[in-house]
Image 1: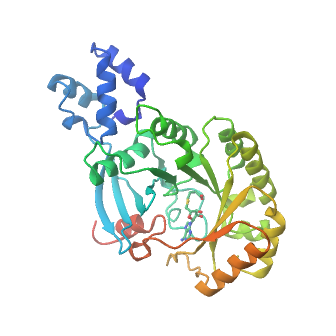
Image 2: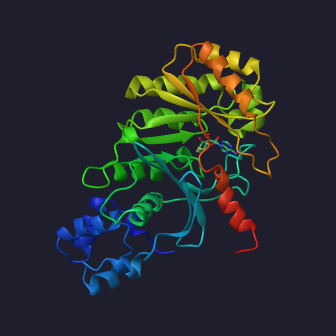
Length: 347
Ligand code: SAH
């Protein structure tokens, strides 16, 4: 694979312009074309000679939208193809306040959570910052005319563990939040982690107040270790301490994600333990009923039980919501679409 032009920030593009003997304004021109989701060969503002020179070193197309599925509620799911043929997924959810895009940070994942489709085939590779950003550039281009920015909010909740690809993810967040670029405020960006504690501390010191979401899924270390292998490394207490540090450093309330799995983490004892663990903390709990992944064999909590779990938490003083499942009819859970394609007969 050649290099990815979208990996360069404005300073990198300025260096490139100087190296190629181009005027420095070219850097800004290329950057704007990148943000409009243009491939190198379609950057017609540049001379044909410059485009050719770029194409010798850089991939023309960092990423394309291979296919789009639209759910009955308007949610769109994309399958993106990378320059080396690898596939990742993304989702665009449309709300009254704007559009939230869910991006992937890795091809596959090495965390291997017991309920998740992304980790079924292990980690293939990290995405570069420009590959992560191109998911947004291409969706903006598809949904708007390239000038209008359709994506207003970003969640790093697609395939991959963002904090396992720390440097590229940080470069991505800096680029899409930079003034003069897409200008998406860090406050409109949510990063979700399975709980990599040292990186959570590192993130708190970056001066980028993104929303920190942590996949908790159980208040009990023993239970958590059964469904999330990463829990063998970091305890629930250590995770909560890292979250408190994040709040102290950034002033941002943190969020716990909790996917309700029938008979596993939806018991009254789990609700009581969450209340004693998190009572009084500056956090919110996002409950969601498990999206059943057939290879994983775990069952979703039924709707009425999910509501009782929610009201237990609320009665215990916690701030919690039960998220409606958007796009459930198009294989909403991470990794389901890619697995359907790479495992299916149509490819
Ligand atoms: N690796 C990061 C980012 C993934 S975000 C993380 O673990 O946080 C996706 C969220 O959906 C995580 O909370 C993840 O645990 C959860 N999830 C994965 N598979 C799911 C499924 N089948 N049903 C419901 N939630 C799922």
